Length: 361
Image 1 (cartoon, one colour):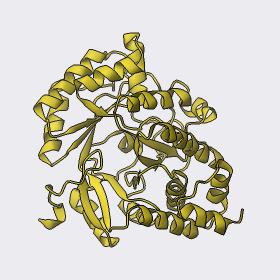
Image 2 (cartoon, helix red, strand yellow; image 1 turned 60 degrees about the horizontal axis):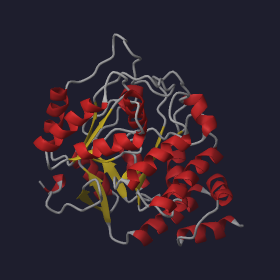
Image 3 (cartoon, helix red, strand yellow; image 1 turned 60 degrees about the vertical axis):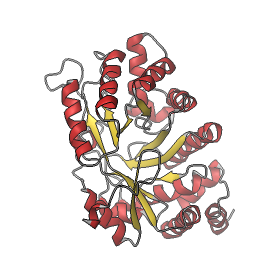
Image 4 (cartoon, one colour; image 1 turned 135 degrees about the vertical axis):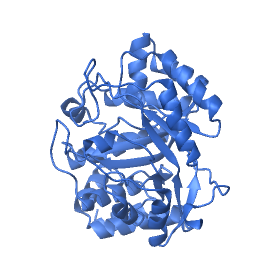
């Protein structure tokens, strides 16, 4: 089908096949692809609102037995530079974030085989009891699977216990590219694509909202990026449990895998095809942490309706060589500068009009 017809159909909400997705992604002129994605975004959200969440990421341990080659953060077991925070240390960081207005707490780290499920249950119960206004949007599929192995249990049983302890939703971290060839090359010890999707399905069946991610720009092909979108779309057709999609690009500078950093144009192209292909996903986040705030601003014209989070504290991407960060005011100014209106939300996209904007002070 001619590119112009595919763009028109996708912009109006028509579904693309896998082959059509690859064709659009590889052949459509960037700005025409972006225009179609922006038209689709405006059809879904005709107001000028752009949402964001006040959140923090607390990387509680860097000890990990998965050893991904794209990661500069982890340290193998018993390494001199390995660390694991105490519960009190984690709680002090939660308090600091809550004092800044954070409503979402992401506690994530390596897959540390020395930590059992009870360690997390006690931690989450304390967070929930001491900071009831924050949502525990934490861990990852890899950490859940790691806990299941430690406990000789199933991921489903682990999720049930974590939910009872206060964990309300599961982030999409650890997906990378859900194609087995890629997994074998960059993270051979990590969950297989079907396992990642299976844990997400289990979490969603338990009533835990989840997000989906894609780390692009390592060794995958362009067609494999669309394959990744396709398996996510199929699971969303089945469960409707994903709240948002967050694509971000690989930062190579301090990792064993090395390689090149994706370009800004490549970042925008991925955003645009994601908005058009993932026709059953409500929200697309501008993952500004790796490309920076200025590219995050452009993302608002390539299909994104959400700026993600403030990410008050984060080490995984930082340790790989990214130095981007932002205050609430800077994030809001980027949105305003693009001609939109920043609006604070919570983890579940409930708007928070009770939380004044930083730019209003």
